[in-house]
Length: 222
Image (tube, rainbow, N blue to C red):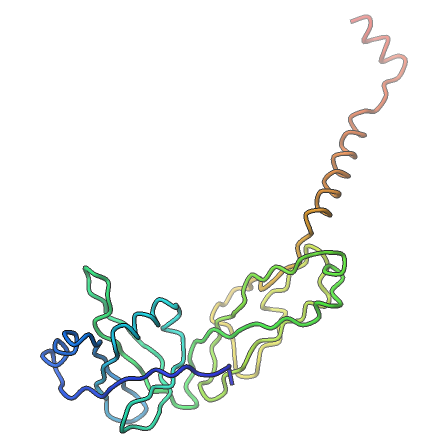
């Protein structure tokens, strides 16, 4: 499983409708609803400061949560919408969907790199530049991988590894259809300077081709 699924604590909302929702907001709570999973929708509230902190952390809509509500079994959920105040841009309502083990969801899975110690480019002083420390994948809720392994053992300087060359965990696929770079090995600044100097030297040498005696004489006559 992909790391530890974070807990999200909520409270069952006693009332339903706009009146109960407004009262919840006055109490510094954000009203919401949990639906799906073959059971009735459940109205809930989440402390305003807890929800805003989660939202500021980013990727709230693609994070799997373990929802804990007193009097109910814990359930895995994913957010399916956050309504915001049009003026203040603060959350006013949140929707969560219960997940079955077979449900397909989009999640960011961390990348772990292997083979750095034998990479010819890194051995020459190259630097492994990580473009995507996480990859967004379609995964099955009941079989979320811990990570995606990316082998960089064959990378030389200026080489890159793309998603098409990575063996993904079974049952997963990228959310992006095009090929994209995950990491590359860039040249260290010292080596880059030496190569640039060598190229400049070759250009100077080409410009300094000596002229023949006849060419010199023609130049004098001019």
